[in-house]
Image 1: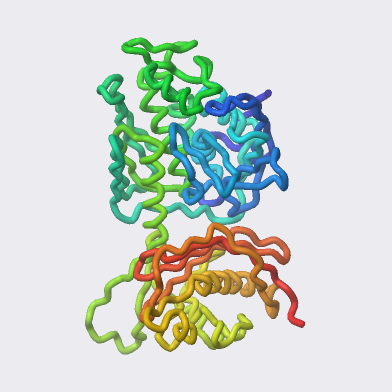
Image 2: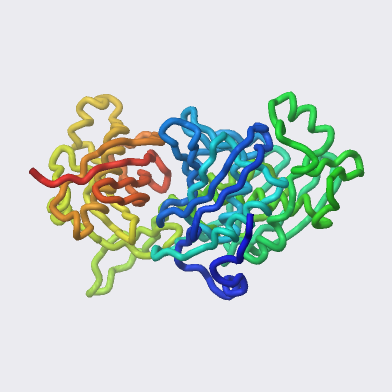
Length: 468
């Protein structure tokens, strides 16, 4: 296929901090075999609307189901990163995700007619050529990066990773095998230029003694010296010379970039990795995701407030430290939502910012459901937490001028998880993000948390209807 430059000069990217979301200008295709499955596969990158993120679409399955590239969908990290939901699977997604992250592409659909993308030459170079052929275009919605709020550390087996606050994404990595062979170190600050020049061409590799184990476990069915480098003792087996003197550690960083992309947002932080693995990379991403969702209650000095000030608790979000604003009080909520006692699950909206909303539900012993759930051990039903997320998402849609006076009907819920019990006296913080809004249909991701700990989460879909 023919390749053309990105839609704007790469040097301009270096001097420009991308503040708007980006997608591909047009679709582009590529074919090959999957590294682990050995299946022949055709793959197409397609543009996607704002706030879509990266989604994998299995066109070989009935209904062409889609999987969102998010950390909560990771189901296996054995020698690669696999995402799945139910019986739906897509294997070895990390090189594609790294490519989109490297070129700062926020929204894209990846269509596949098999369960694993083509491995190409074992690096991300073919995918970079696809992005360059398709071109990149900006979108009107804001690009919302997450900056590491506090240091995090992961120790998993031989792997050790840490993340620290930093103004850009920087990765410093040391790699070696169990015996300390081929120990390499590399550090890079990410940009589209450093991604393409320093990381994208680094190929996957393995040690010769690992091959028997990989084959017995049904892996590397599509592997060959055409798409992987094999290390045997002190010899490097490859069909071409090494592309970098330290190609192995660069590929490890490539994998880290791909696994961190499962956060669903651009990351600003310095990641330090020693002998990383997909399992450890994904665990760090999970902890970053938890930190990102965890509201921080700011302490206030115990002093009389100024005469002109109103006493008010301040809530900060870890990724955007703005003070709590009573965006919608209960009197106005009753004008938006049709729900009433005992089924109104939102007491106040404290913040609306674009397609995101933060609301509060104060859980008291006076709630009628505690009479039967359970009299001797009162616990808020999980389905009512789900209802709270749905109502909060409905508020986001109903606040739009075109939707005023309509009713939001709850249609479905996916990826529902209840993590901890909610008891009388708890203050439920409900956070929702609208991920799709087309005509009458809305879709949102939501979490409920208490004292900074996520107690439940879900993806909800609802339909807007006219009042009868």
